[in-house]
Length: 166
Image (cartoon, rainbow, N blue to C red):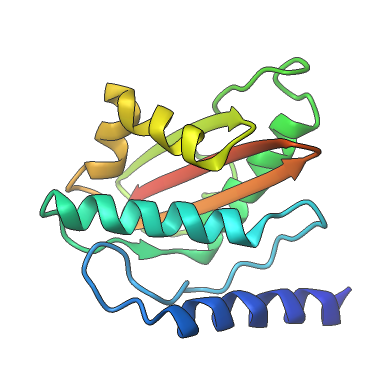
């Protein structure tokens, strides 16, 4: 299990390093490194949404936001809960925002969350950006950190983005 987690972490670092993310909008390195993992985590989808956040924030002149490992863990865990039917089968719902934050992230003043489900990543991203409250979360200048978690269950993606002001 530890070797699998290490391989996954190295794969994500490799993807990030190869892509050469130098533009503003989202920092390259997750700090601290996420540790929550299961076989349904879709690293490619997480990377796509992280890039979408980075590009959208950069386009609209917002400052960088750093990927945060503990928030990614929370986002992955909540996406898995939704995929497992915690919100009633086939439905999505928001997490208890502070669950998984207390005792892990010691200094925060504001937390927000986007959740979504869909069969196509681009359509899911477009739905986030076409929804005023979800778009506001992505572009909010108060955020310092974000965690992105995507679980794939068959042909369905469950996505959670957790935003935090430190």
